[in-house]
Image (cartoon, rainbow, N blue to C red; front, top):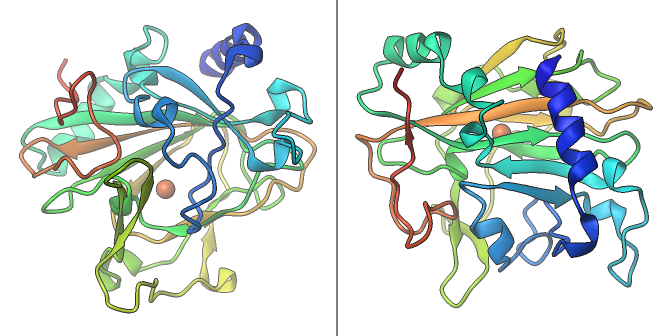
Length: 264
Ligand code: FE2
């Protein structure tokens, strides 16, 4: 597809030697990954590259070729002229209109690479943790650029969880730098079903669109196959909901929630 070819071109042109080598993980360990990294925090309007944690040795050197080491590209792809029409179009608009959005705003657009061998497991999470609004409003648009199945780490979700499991925590910029989670319970832990066997796998063909509710628990496995599993994902929040300055993703240069309006 056009997006897949264009993504490969972006990776070809990407100069890994001048990169801060930001690792990406949505895991729960605050001290892993991209903590405190301006490259990550300032990525809302850029095409930035985030690496697989497993692609580094103990001296923080890449041990894989760059096209096999990139975990994600984001988080402002929707501003790129090639990605824009796949993001802001009549289909997306119709969906958010039907969902009752008053002021739909696009943010956190990204290519998820899910590389072979090191394409990490994404632990169970709720997207409302990462795009926290009051009230919750985020909806994820997830488009498969390659066929997805249980061998290459397709998405899976816990049926009914969006109604039964309130958002447990939020991902924030910490005072003094870095990022971390704020829990809404005293135990500071996730009280939900993390058991893979209860999750339903979503096998799909390339080109499929999956909509992800802000509170649905979802995850994906390691990629056990020998090829990548690329997907393009972006999110829409309602600008009518509160999006505060604690959120990790802010519009540069001075922060704020003035994300791209979804209008035709
Ligand atoms: Fe997610």
